[in-house]
Amino acid sequence: MSVIYALLFAFLYGIVEQSVFRQVDHPTPILGPLTWYHLVIMGPMFIAVGIFTYWPLIPAMFVTADITFFLFHPSAVRGPDSWVNFGLGGFHVAGSWVPWTYVIGVGVSVVLLLVL
Image (cartoon, rainbow, N blue to C red; front, side, top):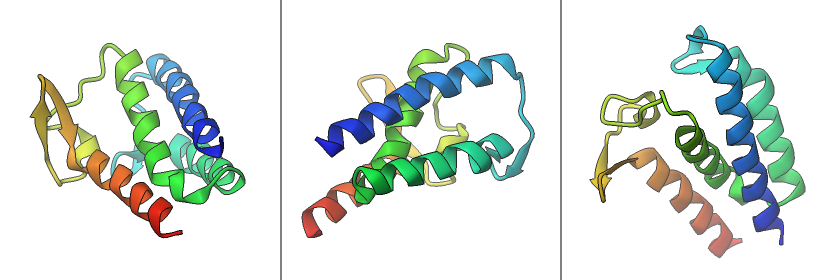
């Protein structure tokens, strides 16, 4: 059940995040693509929820929130030049861009869930 709670939180968080970023045109990045918003609000919240649900899910939670952000933020475009690639690139699946960071995030969570 904690898996459902963690991923539901990440989904809802992605909806809130896209709403915040619709109101701010271009937040100032401080560490790569990360803004103060990410470091002060998102990071601690994800760590807290991950600890209270099941911490190996934290990488998958970040992926879930990011996918939700792009689904509900019509002007945000995920593609080969997107910041979500973090320099690792990605690939197309059924017309959608899938960054390798998504594969790595979900893979790390799956491995941790199987090992622990």
